[in-house]
Structures are given as structure tokens and as C-alpha cells.
Length: 469
Image (cartoon, rainbow, N blue to C red; front, side):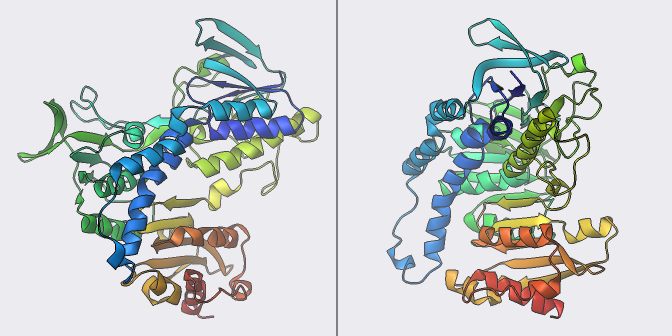
């Protein structure tokens, strides 16, 4: 075969597909479910858990509709619908797609054993040796990272996998962490009937504009979540059917379940990186075409979370498409070592235009740089803020609409380098902001992109007016 792709999640599938479309013979190697983390334990099931609660809350904010709401969520029905979005944790349909695309599939655990050489320990106990003519691509994603807390490793706990696939609502849930996974799953399980506590040592959503974490924290508290910032457990122990967290100064927290959501780390264990001159830990450093740096011959590629660049499913798929196209072009002799920024062979957006959505209620959506990040990069920064409650389209969505928007402007070029929106339904605003950042659209031209009335997109008009146009 021409290309061996290790990892058949969304990233590996996209890389294999693009390389195959370029005329190469490709085989995917997967040790778990074809489709990967996003399909079964992350993006899809987590949103299926969240959205029924959002719909119910949205109805309660609208007089007339609110009168028709006479009960709460049917947790069993929500969990059942979640199961359908995870395909019942059956990957047969994904495997069928792989076959239909003309891509080979080998199930087992893969490791590098030399240049272009991969050994796969199969589910049947046998070992298969693969040698790629052109490239090997590592798309193994990431795994949860655990904090150094006394007793945690030996205490039963959830990671995101267990939290998105649980079949019963726990009576109580303690969440350690304050990032995207922590806040999304805290709200989902609180609205499904659990009593949830969040312990966030560094606050909520630390990578976003500060107002985003504040609004989400207020919403979680309004839902009944016990949010404790500046707090983390000193030790954890099992107690009967639950867990006890020691918070210091004699304070403890008891819960039926514990979710640890303190980040993820590239999945590189057991890949045999040492056999090709790489260290066996940390992310795989790549250039914008996906080539792993430090490997002679340029045959090793990587994309997605394993590179540590932009650990989001959509960014991983984007990088995978660039890498797959680059592999095929180089195999044909059509592409050299360097790739042009913003070309189909380069994941340029990883550096300056990464979009992200937190699917809480309110949603948080941002792209590019925060005001603080832009300042740290030495840009001449100006931030423009708008209260979304004053936008007609937002007021139609809900009585008492609460939300905020910010543009981060590079004054020297008069272009948007970052945008953040927080509020009900703001995720659909994000792509327009992403286009503005990627396209470096001058503000004077952006002024002529007239938002329809009355939609929440009218916030663009208010932001540009706030800037002074």
C-alpha cells in the first residue's frame, strides 16, 4: 500500500479519504471503534445530552410557550436519543463507509518499527507487518490527563467517555475542572436531575474572554450547580458507593460519581516513536502540511490532537485534509517540501483563526485571538463590546436575554483578529466571524456586509458602530 494511517477517528478518516482521492492506496488501522472519540464519546453524544435541556430552557423564556411547559426532561428518553447519535457504540456503518471509499481497514494496535514500517497486533492475536511506499500518518488523537491528586488513580471516576455514555443519572456528581468538557457535562447532568458540584481551580473557560466564563458560571449557578472556583481536591477516596473529596481545612465533598475533566494529552504511548528517532512523549511537532519534524525523509505525518496544535475535531479534520492532499501531491511529484500559506496543502488557520464553540446555555463561540492574546503578540489592539440584550433579534429569542459580544481589532491593519460571542444561540454567528478573520476583511468593507433584520446577526452592525463606523 501507499499510505498507512494509524487511527480511524474523524481525523484519520479524512486524511485517508483525501489521500485516496489523490490516487493512493490507503489502509486505516484502528484498535477501537471506527469513527473515534468524537462519534462515540465526545462531540455527538455530549451535544445530544445537552440540547434537550437547552430546548426546554428556551421555551421557558418565552411567554406563551412557557405556559405549555408542565414538566421536566424525560431523562430516559434523552439518554435513549443520545445512544442513537452514538450508533449504540456500533461502528459497522462507519466501517461500511471506509470500504465504500476504497480504503482498507485493519483492526488492531499499531506501532512504528522503522522507516515506513508499521506492525499491527490484531484482535485475533496475530501480527501484520505493513510497509508504506509513501507515508505513514499518525492520527491517534488524545486521552484524558489526570491531575496529581492523592488517591485519584485508585478511586473509581469518570472521564469524558464514561460521562457521555452513562446509562443512568447519578444522584450527585462532582466535576473537577473548569474547561469545556467540565462545564458542558456539568450542565447536562444537572438538567437531567443530578446534583452537580464543579471544582475549578483556575475558574471557568480560561482560554476564552473573561466574560464568557462569568456568564456560563452564572448560568450554571442558576441551574442549581454548586460552582466553586479557586478550589481543587487535595485527596480523593472511595466511600461505599460514592467518593469523598478532601478540599482542605476540614472541608469535604461527597458525591455518587466523580468526573475528572482537567484536560487531555496526545495519545502517543505504545506507538514506537523511539524506533524512528523521536521521544515517546509529548505531541508530534508538524509543519503546516502535517509532516512530522525531525524525521529524515519526510515520510511521517500526523494530524489532529496528537500534534497538540488545535485540539478540536473540526481543526483536526481540516489539518487531515491538508495532509492527505500533500501526501498525494508529493507522491505524484507535484509538491516540494515547502507549502504556501493558505494553500490546500497547509493548515494555516491553526495559527490565527481557530473557531470553537462551548455548547452550554448560554453558548460561547469564539475565533482567533482574545484581546489579551492579541496584546501578548504585540498587536495594536482595540476591543469593541456590545450587550446582546440590545439587539432586536436576541430580544425575540428570549425575555431577559443575556449575552455579550466582542470584536478584537488590529488597529494597524483595521481588520478583525478575534471575535467572541456569548448568549443563547450564538454558535451560528461564528462562521461569519471566522470568514472575517481568515479573509482579513477590512472593517470599511465589512461595514457593507449588511445583517438581516431582525436576527441576532445584527450584532455585527452594533459592533462596527461601536468601533466608530
